[in-house]
Picture 1 (cartoon, rainbow, N blue to C red):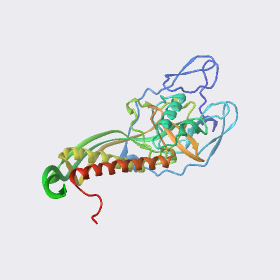
Picture 2: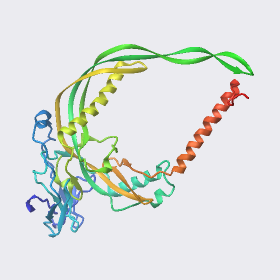
Picture 3: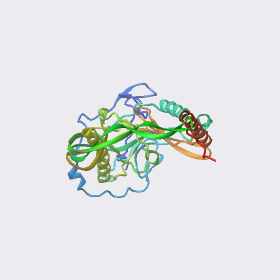
Picture 4: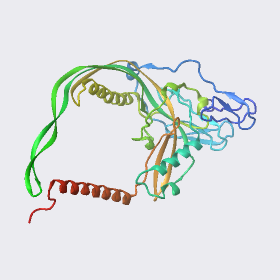
Amino acid sequence: MADDLLHKPCQTCGATLNYEPGATTLDCPYCGSQNDIAVPAAALARFELSPALGGASETDLPPERHISCPSCGAEAIMAPQVFARSCDFCETVLIDQDTKLRRFAPQGLLPFGVEEGQARERLRRWLRSLWFAPSSLARSARAKQRLRGVYVPYWCFDAMTKTDYRGERGTTHTVSRRVQVMKGGKSQWVSRSQQVTRWRPASGQVARRFRDLLVQADGGLKELEDRRFSSWDTDALEPFAPDYLAGYEARLYGLDLPQGWQAALRAMEGVIRGDIRHDIGGDKQRIHTLNTHHWDERFTLVLLPIWMSDYRFGGKDYHVVINGRTGEVRGQRPVAWWKVVVAALLVLGLVAAALLIAGASEGVSLTPPI
């Protein structure tokens, strides 16, 4: 398997090179020479979806693979869903390019733009800003190991859609109602405002072009479950080049293409429903039926950069992920429940005070009569 491994040496001195976030060349830390990153001239490939959905199903990933580093000869273990990593001893880039592992290979990626030191600082700020977290969290939380730079696979979908819908448009009006209250020990009739909604049938058609709809395709990273980043700058996607992987881990997809497409359809429907509500207008909307037609459906597989770490607090491990392009932090955190209780009691106290003030102004008794 030695032919399937990538060793990226310096063209001048032969030292192992790593990719530095934001760089356009691989700079040698020993002799200072600049080595160009070999970026394919072709544009990012996008494929027709329908023929690919009808292909053969994915096979199970093989168990851990044992490979030898071509630089120092040390044995390295490639986990089932990992296809690129650095040698533990000499940091040579090891890339298992065995095409039998998965049907589709990555076609593009977003290179790392946030350095490890910047990611650590973002993590510290995030820990200090957490509401209801223990006061000592930012001081005592320590990373169990260095931040891991990981390229995570994502399905990237394009599609045109047209949706016919039927629903209702609600218009809210404020009406005045007379109610009886006690004021100054006497019963009085006063006016109270109340909102009512009038509904009318609505129907129409909305259209949307989806571009670069991302679906996380790893399937084996608990750190990424329910921790979506707000955005990725997909306009900056580069054609896949192994040089960008130098010094990082890269993973294979575990969520196959049909599963990824189903997840994309669910995400599209959520956006389309928002379009329909906007098209219906009014103050409130009801959607009874919708029928969406998709066409010009395309896909590609891309790798996106994420810093991963975990920290230990109170005898438990907590996972954190950091966007390798923007520094956005998502993760788990401990909760100081005494802070939650104090905040809840404070809110209840404010509500009770407001009710007492309102009751006193209208002569409403908050205690039952004797």
